[in-house]
Length: 333
Length: 264
Ligand SMILES: Cc1cc2nc3c(=O)[nH]c(=O)nc-3n(C[C@H](O)[C@H](O)[C@H](O)COP(=O)(O)OP(=O)(O)OC[C@H]3O[C@@H](n4cnc5c(N)ncnc54)[C@H](O)[C@@H]3O)c2cc1C
Image 1 (cartoon, rainbow over the protein chains, first blue to last red):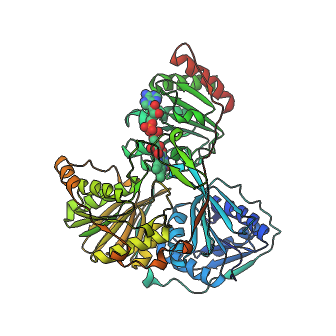
Image 2: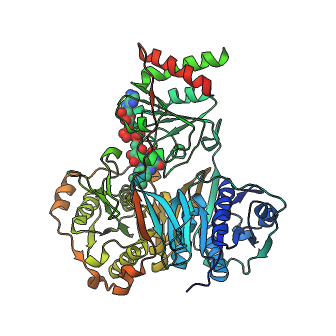
Image 3: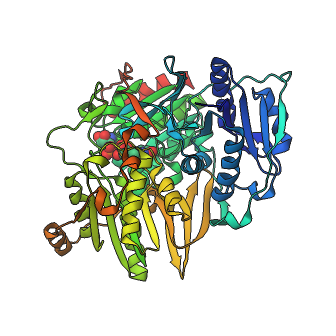
């Protein structure tokens, strides 16, 4: 039925470097492509994309499509959808992979709406189903309480967004060879209905949550904005960052960008200290990659103790100050 | 300003993980007894977003829910919060539709309603959470779409939308009519006001079937589903948690500090 072939990764980059998620997708894509015996291609969009083609090939791409267009320098939904959809209609990939990132979360459903494929969002595992040779995509449902595996039997392309930090990054091999192919056609400016009028980077004091080696997260049980100072102090002693659950963000105790979880940030620090949060699956989804999880909760039956390596049952207000003081002492000693 | 809000009724996602049970064979979740279904969190925030616009600009809010007859409850909830009107889309042919089928049914209902400036959806449903329906719906309606909004302002025929991105935020502008999906960043929803609650409870919510909205059977045929669930499982990840104790909480904290200082 199908003259579609190959895997297409929608790449992302910033400041002349491929985004970590794209290198993860290249690792995954290479594996799936080898299994199917089909090529792996990457689409890079923007006027600076051509500087990244060799790196993309070194990380495993057979073909790199470059959409060299200044209208694609910043992500805009209409322009990206247009160019990616055109390429998919010309190159006819059988599988399209995106990161579950700001870009992917917006672009994937729009692209799929236009192409009429079958999409699975926020995937944790992807494989080729041996019986059908189709892409089997496993994703969290019911707030992470269950995992569903999906197939697209006939809709094409088969699409997935992949959660960052769930796949090992591709290995770099600078001797790899590949083709660079220009994408024909430019963005039609009249099709850009939604205009980006402002984009502001927020300056973060101290360590960035996503990069921190230690994260101290607080939940609803923290009880107020002021009490987060205790978490900040502990984070400072450990050179880490503060995170939060959705309720703590909803209440305005901390900025929403500190939300960890399925609909927030995914972190994978060496140490994750979960304070006064119950450990709902949708929250844990954002920190399961942590090496060591510590839970402090007054409810001994809280779910967080099911995923933690160390736990203390008790009121965090009585525990955190002592913990911070002792760690400070041990560090200076 | 006329706004249509799409709301879904879901199994309460906040039931404790221990109570969460599935039928792996049927690939369905078994709703625990005595836990009533709720309006999906993000859809409730979408209602809140609509209400904030109405507070400023007046106009009409219509809520739409595809689901069982019980979905009238989420329409009533939206009305209690301040929506004016609502419809339930219920038909045997609507059961277990994928995102494309769902968006198709919603689009047909919206086209039947006719006039609108804005369609709002939650960013994703709290149950299957595909996060696709809004984008497909906009594509079918042929209107611009903005996903994951954290703030919406309207001026004349233009919408100004803030969305949070990982390292900051961006502000987008789109002409009306437009579709916007709403994230939790928009803020907490208001509580229903007492008298509206009574009024909403008594309200009869019309039910629209496939033929009422002119939905074509081929579009609802499960054979044409874009995606299919072939497996459902409950992730098991039980770690051995070492409980740290002490004579006092401060003591326990000191023991924990000693363990942690070896790790970092
Ligand atoms: C589709 C979907 C996506 C979601 N995405 C996210 C997400 O990205 N991130 C997220 O966090 N949530 C998310 N949620 C919400 C999630 O399901 C939970 O509602 C939320 O994580 C609970 O937050 P919490 O643990 O802070 O609050 P609660 O569940 O209310 O827990 C509070 C905890 O604090 C403890 N406590 C109270 N006082 C003290 C004290 N003095 N000392 C010690 N312990 C105390 C209590 O014992 C309790 O365990 C999502 C839900 C859905 C359905």
